[in-house]
Image (cartoon, rainbow, N blue to C red):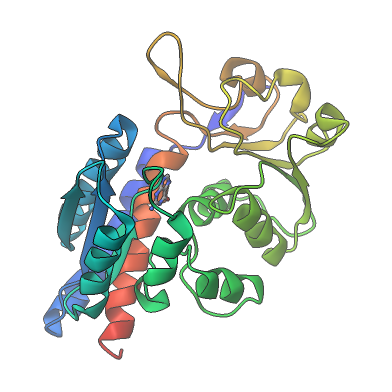
Amino acid sequence: MQAKIIDGKALAAAVKQEAAAQVEALKAQGVTPCLAVVLVGEDPASQVYVRGKINDCAQCGIESRSIRLPETTTQEELLAHVKALAEDSAVHGILVQLPLPAQINEKAVIDAIPPEKDVDGFSPVNVGRMQIGEPCYLPCTPAGCIRMIESTGTDISGKQAVVIGRSNIVGKPAALLLLAKNATVTICHSKTKNLQEICASADILVAAVGREGFVTGDMVKPGAVVIDVGINRGADGKLHGDVDFAAASEKAAWITPVPGGVGPMTRAMLMLNTVEAARRASGN
Ligand code: GUN
């Protein structure tokens, strides 16, 4: 079997159209959604991601504010910026790009973003609400993964889902969202025994490890849906996922490419969260 490609770019374009239509409706009521993106330092990958987010805002008619701070920024300085954005009623969403330089405590910064402006879905309040199934901002990458799986027509309910990786940003929330869709979920990590066997039992396999080619062909069940969250810069200078794409494609029914898979969808989901933040702030 040769896997079909889950086209992240095309899906993201559709989600952004959805966001743009909602922006139009909000603008007609006098509300312009606005996202503030804070980038500390010069990390090249972060610069690319932030540029993409600002471009997506423009495409959707969302106003954006880009706040660039030097690598030497102190925690107090960054917190002062976040506080100003938190108090600015024209700003609906605040995103502080991670990772942050070593002198800054990431948790203190995330905690300073009011939950109602936390369009990343990283604040403890949103994480907690997600866990108990209350309305919240879902973290963009796992929410995008779910949309990609559903775009294949796969009914998640009752399926064996395996998530490799247990980060707060991707692995843990991806597992929770799959559980909320009634999948039987296993989370694998660096201490997992029988990794190959567990992964090969997955109808839905989500790889969020951060290691190029970590998922080999023998870890993919024939007919599986494979979602590759990894973005790794290879020795060839190109971007590669966590999945050995060629080998996995021979077994899976559906697979996401890297680039052009989860990345664009993540950013598109951020646009939906920002529009939602503006809608809630407007009282609609
Ligand atoms: N760094 C890598 N992914 C993300 C993300 O989704 N949000 C933020 N704020 N930083 C990131």
